[in-house]
Amino acid sequence: MIVTAHKARFTEPLRLSGGAVLPEFEIAYETYGELNAARSNAVLVCHALNASHHVAGTYAGDPDNVGWWDNMVGPGKPLDTDRFFVIGSNYIGSCFGSTGPASTNPATGKPWGADFPVVTVEDWVAAQARLADHLGIERFAAVMGGSIGAMQALQWTLDFPERVRHAIVIACTPRLTAQNIGFNEVARQAIMTDPDFHGGHYYDKGVVPARGLRIARMVGHITYLSDDAMMEKFGRALRRAAPGYDFEIDFEIESYLRYQADKFAGYFDANTYLRITKALDYFDPAARFGGDLAKAFAQAKADFLVVSFTSDWRFSPARSREIVRALLDSRRIVSYLEIDAPQGHDCFLLDDARYHGALRAYFRNMPL
Image (cartoon, rainbow, N blue to C red):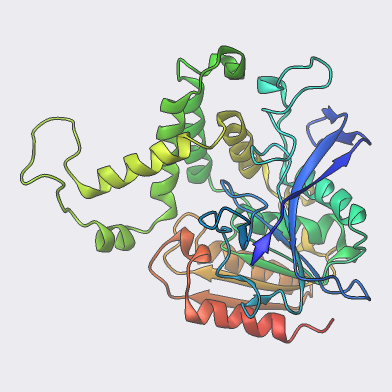
């Protein structure tokens, strides 16, 4: 499937949750499939931390650049683009085409850098609603995502309840635990204490805080995998014939983490990483309702599919069941699937026959 990236430009200011205002902004997006005559078959796919609007397919002349959820979205796949019109949207604050810290600040003519405001899941959804208006979509058949993408799907049902018929919420949590916030803070400190960070204005210096990004990625990547998956893949295998009794790479897991860290630091933006992790920390739809999640969901009108994975210790199944209980208490229609899979939080990205079969059946039975 050959796809094309697009950008939509919005000149009406967007007021953010933190009080700042974006005077104008762009959203990068892709579409797959065709919008039907009734405009009733649109599905919005919301991406997770280090992904983008490039959900599926490849670009002409770049066959190796495969969309991050290509195993889920496409002709004949669980989210079948022969039936649905799928939109992949890049959230604001990203480094993949939508307006973010590396974009030009119209007030200065220079990159925003550290002056780009902190954004929230609510802000992303508000911007996505502008994109839906731009595309002429009044109501989505479904909004779908995994991890922080699933948070966006939940937020859509609260902020725009009339515009979402189904929410597909995968590997999610209704709010981060103190431990999860702690992991994010370690990652942010690694970036902000890098000598090349320069208070977030490193673009002007022509440098990248690569050391901080590398550490942030290592910390994050460990949390996305389960202990069992790491042992099965790497165990205690050595890279050398025997321990070196130094601080070079001894174990295969060390080599893997360094490789992932180097790759990440080569394409991701540090200012974006700081803002995305803060958006994760701030997400808490029950906060405005005295911590009562059921009261928060009382305003939703969508039907829900919630999916969790047994080995996901970052956003554990217990947190998904918390969402399910609150939805039931608020008298929403909800289906829940808990998959026994060993790979950890990243399960939502992988091929699993039970998981993909359930999503395929859910979409197949969705009336348009």
